[in-house]
Length: 221
Image (tube, rainbow, N blue to C red; front, side, top):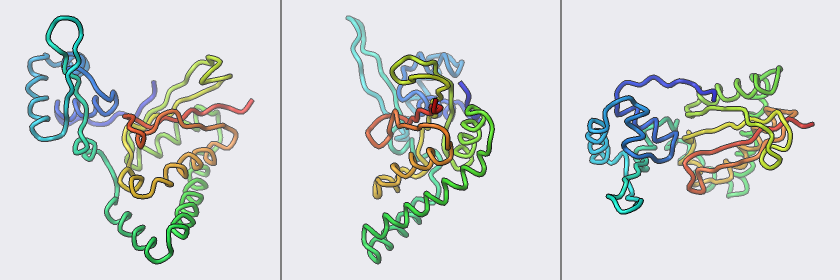
């Protein structure tokens, strides 16, 4: 798996990043990943839960005590980059009041078309893997926690290679998407323009309650 390494300033930051990537995990799994004792991790988890950054649910397995599965809360997700949300939403609300929803839709489409062409120019030429890597780096630079990896043809998700999955664990425009969900559709279109000879489809979607957004990139044979 290819990812962009994010600098960690503390064990708590490492825990939050791990939960962002995994969706949810037990204290034991977190301890193994962070390479800290489970006892110490439980103290950090207690602190993070007290701060409202994580939450847990109990899962019963067998006759023993239930396992606690931890995940980020909405407040925890907001710790990760989301640039200029308040200004952007306020601006779009003003446009909606002035131009109507159809007018805002036109503005958003034009914006993403411009962004798509910018991506296409900056992604440049090369193999699909090289261009996917550049596209993911552009997204990271914009505040996304993103990574990519190749998948083998399986006759279902990937009909024939090469195929790549782009995964984004946060959304730098999540609050905008809540008010103006059409931006997510434009985002998919933007990837399709940036990777001109590829088919791009969505595999996972934060808006639908999943813990990540995922895109399958497949070369057109």
